[in-house]
Image (cartoon, rainbow, N blue to C red; front, side, top):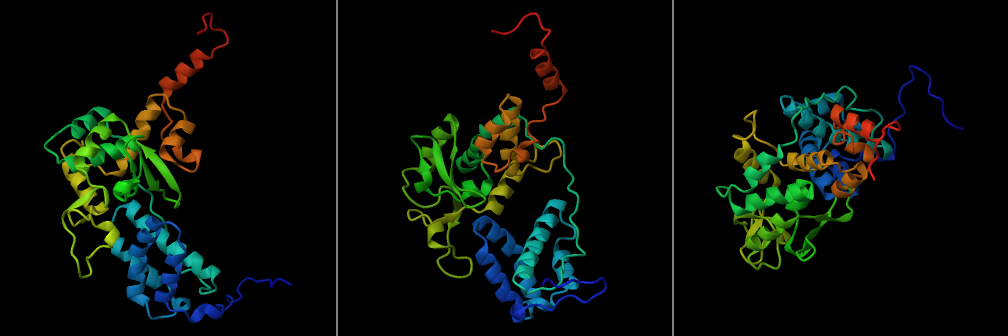
Amino acid sequence: MPVIAFPGSPPDPPGPGADSSVTAAIDRFLACLPAKTTRDSYAKTLTHLAALAGNRRVADLSCEDYAAVMDRWNTAAAATWNRHLSALVSFTTWAQRQDLLATNPARRLTRRPAVRRGDRAIPAARLETLFTDERHPLRERLLWRLLYETAARADEILSLDVADLDLERRRARVTSKGGAIEYVHWATATARLLPRLLQGRQAGPVFLADRRAPATGRRAPATADICPVTGRGRLSYPRAEYLFKTATADLDPHREGWTLHQLRHSALQHLAEAGRTAPELQAKSRHQHLASLGRYIRLGEETSARITAEHDPAARRRAR
């Protein structure tokens, strides 16, 4: 028979796995995540939890421990705060299912409302100015255009190897957010630039860092992330983001510079404005749910008026 919990009764004690250390539990949790991008993102947060309470039992984690971890991002943007909090909440949910935790140390922490600007989409004319400005290196101009033309996530494109490219069909094989293997497609401008960047390379990362990768030490990358021809490592997301924000600071009305994710957002917004339907946007963006595309297909009053007029039963002239 199920046990009935009465108000005021103490919580059930943690299960037999409660003696697990925080560090060991975090390792097990991360190993359960199928998507590498999610593992890497959560690891950035949980590393700080392990540093704070790594040798202690998971069952002994407290609200104060979680608050101390989140205090590192107390002055960060709401999106950054929410991202790190999501990592802690996901770990907590997993630990409770494993009977490692009887309480919720994240219960006093709340998500912060994100301040959304109304101009997240970058005007197409400004993007074309940016893409064709030869003051910027070829690598950056190709990366930015490729992100826009494919509407792909930045980490997907930065993770590309030369072997993933199908130049003839103008597509590349990527590992999506959920771990599935999918294809992204580009247009003529990217097709013209790619051979110039590759210069005959047949293996290694598509986008390379500026310097040779260290062979030893804690900063040495995996062999798969090193170009066998040049010895340079893979271009990192933080570096690519910094270069893009720096290059676009003068074009941004807020003088803050744009983010790489805004290229994906802009591509979908521009396709929606050109009349593409939600299912077509889903095919392009590879979103799992159509509801995620609602922000792109809200085209305003003019679109509503045009659709109403075109489908008015009383209209005397009908398009043939």
